[in-house]
Length: 104
Length: 431
Image (cartoon, rainbow over all chains, first blue to last red; front, side, top):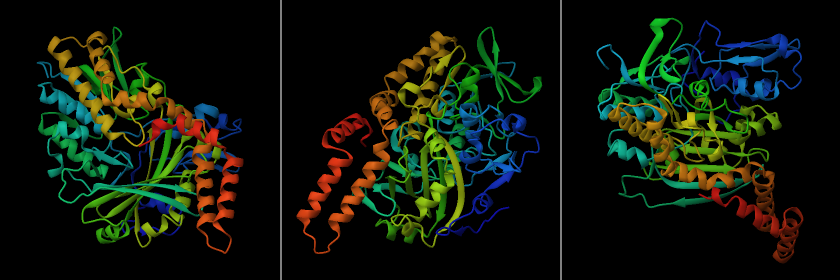
């Protein structure tokens, strides 16, 4: 999923457009784990709106997450432990895996 | 390395702080391993900013002749925005024949790679794709790092320098600090928009090779933060930064703020016709001087973002300065063959005497005042724009009436005393 040519910048980009510009080497080993049972009792769910890659979503009122797209800033864990239920355990992907920025 | 193949020092993170520390130690004759979790140095690094000549020039004299740099900054712009207008101030210096310049834009994927190669030339052993999971402790002293399960992933040294970024799992595990809290970090999102060099120079009124840094306020719904546009050689870095705790109150997605910023009438003409080439996000230390943790313990020091040594709009220069002083402290420890906290405390002493800590200390109370003052990022930008829109609009109504209206708006919404108090309490944030 890479758009090497770029996308007209004045257009409103979708998140899929944006993540499509990035290069990911997906780590098959989970580097984010979420105790989604705990999430059921979490009213605030700040992970749903702070993540710049929207890794976290609700599906049939259940929290689901897809680490592909993760830009490894760890913000989900910070907010989850701050006003959520401390259900997210975030780590770096294994060496060389995950996102690679060509500009940065 | 001694006879058993042990390194004198392990540096974790090949960003500006880690690479500077490694380079300083290697030049002083120490055997240094530099571990980077990305595929290459810079692969995980993001900034929206300027590389200043200080202190890089002290580390690599005439770096501007060989480093991959984008544009020399001659134009500093500040914009106070409302939803649909903007007041722009530009301070521009005569850059003709004035090299070397005070600051340059850079693409981190290129610059960090180049910078780490300089450390390698000085004898540093660089390992990429190497994630460090933990520090190894023995008798209360840090003695090495663990890069995965099993004894084969253990690496020992007299000293570990953690330059592993704002989250710094290593500083946390060493008990030097806690994980970031939402009021200690800002979240930045940015896009790199490709444009021909000539278009950039025409749009920003620049000569060939010259660059603009533009910071804006008033684009974060009254929350602490702002927008930026930096000119690279053939692209613009366009982004928005917001304090994480304020983003949590706002409940907006970070990229929605970026959408608004890019669509703003004062920003959109800069990027029109360009191609978005990369989207990225990063956490930026925003903890102020009071957030700076203890910088050392037995067998270990921390530098750069890992120690929250970042103070808007400066970061990479503070990281390099701290890396250099950590490196010097390490050489002092090596000379005495003593890597105890007592010996490494020289790092803390040198830091206290440095620009880094002095500047952060100077700004600290203003930083706190800004954090807790909702007028700065919302009311004032809106009011300034509202008054200018009214006063500059010619419609047959006298300026006397418009000025009167402006005065009463200012009095009703702010008041002179409060405005003076706000200005005084945030004076340390002046450029």
